[in-house]
Length: 472
View 1 (spheres, rainbow, N blue to C red):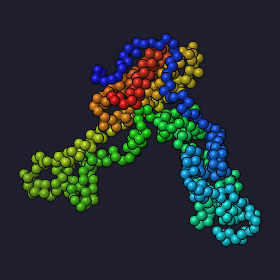
View 2 (view 1 turned 90 degrees about the vertical axis):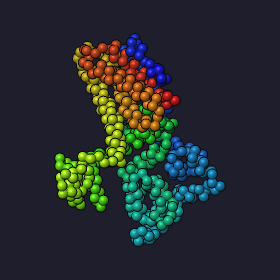
View 3 (view 1 turned 180 degrees about the vertical axis):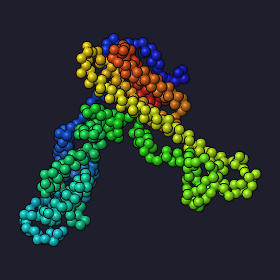
View 4 (view 1 turned 45 degrees about the vertical axis):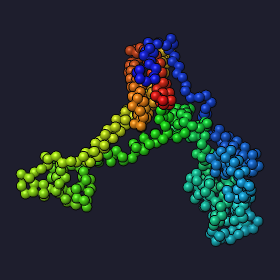
């Protein structure tokens, strides 16, 4: 380790804690983010709308649409509003200048241009642009737009041809039935999160909370227990960037490795007019393509008819021919496939170990409350703390293999250092796992406390080292 700038933690193996309770350092900056439930989201949304109303002296309906069109960023709304010499023209371009002048029921009846019926005044509705239609046609149109999902908030314009006047939220609420009104309200609140760069929904199934933060690569904990990245919305992924994680997920999901397998285990039919890929599934080297019926030798790929040339003495498959291009192709495919499988296997193993540790943590705590023995929560707390750390360590180790897969562009020294400290963390994690999986009567609590502390330090320094660039 003399070649690398990395502190050894060997002395930590004998540094026993004096108390059973193990306290881990929280690396998340204080007040960096907050968990927001549905009610708080609604309050936040209304607060931003009111601020824009006061700032631009416009109505709530206008403020809401301007915010939706600008990622719910009031500074961006203000900038785009005042960068126009004529703000009125800007509001007309946005389709909101007349938005508050809609009417449900008009002064006189109309002939609806959509259905062609004569409609009494009380059954008509008109937008601020002046276009009037019967309520039934409006309801059918709004329900159809609502079926399109959240896009209905920004794409529902007047029924009139080429009229870009947007339909206000109050118009939806006035004409739709109760269930559809609630659906519209859901899309309205959802847009506040979906288009807002500083708020993300918690991705846990069934959780209706959102996280409000200051942006950046920030890993957050929802009150439901889900840990995720505020930037990309995926599970928290220490040491791996959002782009690397995206590339890894795409690689695991696409057919690139299937292609590599095909290169390794199949050959193209030598008939130039066919060239389909063929897998050999029997011992005989006399092959017949099922597509073009061409007969050839699997070894040399020559035509089977000319293989012996009428004389067994002319057999030549044992003679060396320069096939360096084919060999190079196979070698590259095999190497890449083996490299991918190396990292993917270890990624999946740590993912399974993480899930097992989560289940063991839940089961251990449940059994602790049901246990009639003399084990107290205080006595067992170091074991639970160790399991909490192991869940975190497994998740970090899982993503170190994604990081390692994309480490080829780094220097050999940096790669060697990465693998060295990765091995240290992995070894300590395995040791601590073994200690926590023993029956309680066989556990050594001081040893668990010690290895919990040591593993935590290795983990923290590892993450910090990767984030700081290791050898940089």
